[in-house]
Image (cartoon, rainbow, N blue to C red; front, side, top):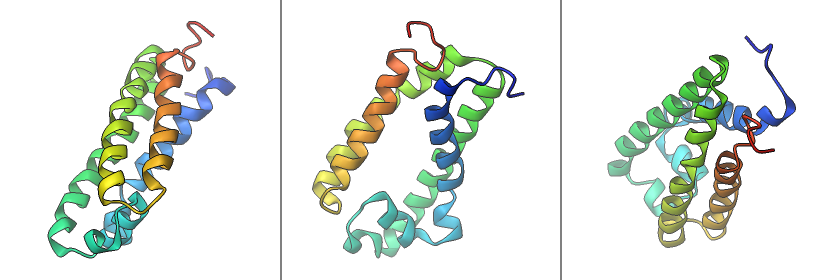
Length: 131
């Protein structure tokens, strides 16, 4: 299954693992802890009305993480590059939302790491098509 592993596969696999497990945080540690880890301010994180939203968001993140692992294990490296390049949109949305409703610094942090992953995919670095 991992017979095609190369070092350049590491960044998307780390992200896939973080998302597969991290998406469960609202179920394992509670919605408030998940929202605080995401970077939302404590006023929003403590809102009972926001709890169902983070649970749904977490299931979607876990699904994307599992899909990334499935795509990788199936040997579809170009498809994995396409998927992670789409994370650029998450970077934009997370950055905008957290700059308004987040803990100071979290918007920049999320924007930075998600942009790096998106650029990795745009440059097709997982598949090695160009680099």
